[in-house]
Amino acid sequence: MNRPHSMSFTSITSPTLLLNSEIARANIRRMAGKCRDLGVGFNPHFKTHQSREVGEWFRAEGVERITVSSIVMAEFFADAGWDDITLAFPANVREMDRLNALAQKVKLTLDVISDTAAITLDQKLQHSVRVMIELDAGYGRTGIPAGEKERISRILDVIDASEKLSFYGFYIHAGHTYDVRGRASVAQIHDQTLGALHRLKADWLGRYPDLKISMGDTPSCSMLDNFEGVDEIRPGNFVFYDVTQAEIGSCGYDDIAVALAAPVVSKEPQRREIVVHAGAIHLSKDTVIQDDAVRFGRIAMLRDIKWDAPSDGCYVRKLSQEHGIITLSQEIFDQLEVGDVIAILPVHSCLTADCMGGYLTEKGEYIRMLNWRR
Image (cartoon, rainbow, N blue to C red; front, side, top):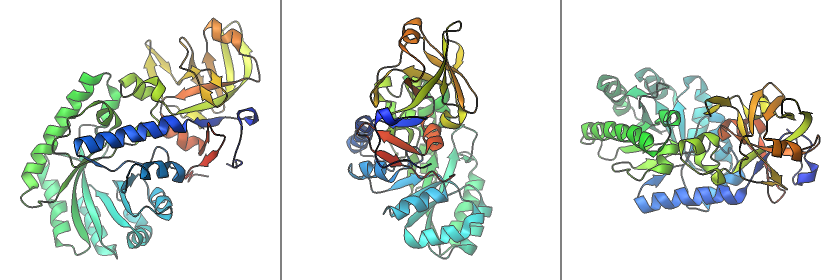
């Protein structure tokens, strides 16, 4: 995706992801300050923004260690000068050449969830790496259930016998906090997760006195203050937030730092709907339930490159590849004409950002992302 170094609002002709840098910096500053106040390490996940420039905003808040979700992302940020990187995705042993090259360049921590992968890493790595074991918090994605001590022990035996692997600690991502609403529900999941981590740490601390405990979900890290026994947190989505996080209660709508600018191409008065150039390839097809109906995004009016609070009764009803069908209140419908541009607050900012590959800031600067698919 080719974009000029700088743009203005009037030059927007196609779907463009807007970034309010003031809001994003405030989100970073708030989370970094919380970590300092709680005495918890801050190892933020960069999968949401995937940008060298945004990464520097973290560096300005004292961040020295980062987390990523792919080898390509790790290489991208290593080239940007980050030298302590965790690849928080189960180690892919088919990428051994690239893992070796990266391990030679940075302090690398890998995610391992099987003794088979640990054995392969031990046999084929040429440089030392740290290894963290991912736990399943009940999310059902990846990781070892905390109670399966034999599986954990088999991995640790491989690590202990290896000259290239060293045990870093346990990592857990309570992703099912995304499925609930409200502080009490998030706290219930968090407390269950924290209890499992405490028990696990007690089991292994005698053998590994320096082991670290890491957690990473944005709802818990944003809403709660009880991180007793946790050494570091790794949230990522908080840098931009989104409609999902606002509905959970992790943030307010005024904390959302990105919005998709979408040109209006058609008005449909009988349906009180507009059609915009903004589809699934721009927003993704993630949804949120509001008023017992599926929504693909919320709508806000644009004021140059900034946007207002979301408008009541206005939402993305349907997406196809390039088309977005938006239902509007009569008041907002009457204000818009074909050729205008409207803002869509994304349901999932991580996926929308990845789809778009870059951001236009309120200063008219275009920031490129890793954008590895293009």
